[in-house]
Length: 111
Image 1 (tube, rainbow, N blue to C red):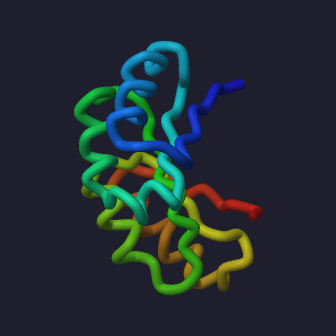
Image 2: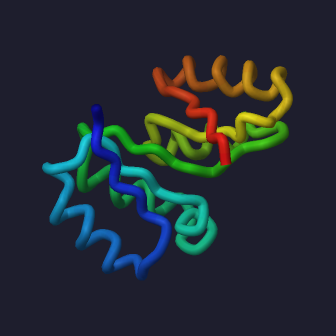
Image 3: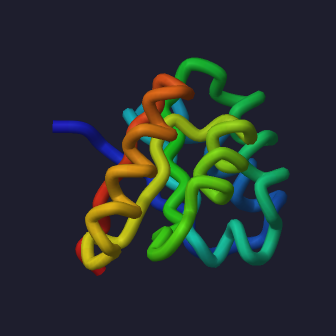
């Protein structure tokens, strides 16, 4: 079992303080879609600098296309990028192939 910190709300300085405080206690840091919309992928980069060895999941819930979005997430420091499980199979397959080029993973999100 792995413990995941899911960050979906908060001010940037509060988020960074929480990550700093609990990073050693969690297995994965997840940055939720609302935080990507609010703060951009710069937040992912800041958290990557704070926890260079910790897996980071960016929960962007890709649905169509998405390889460009996934690439930007991986470039920012994500190890895992989410795709909606109801996305067309060809989209999911493309994302999996893109993730492999970054030695990353794709997470199929059921919600």
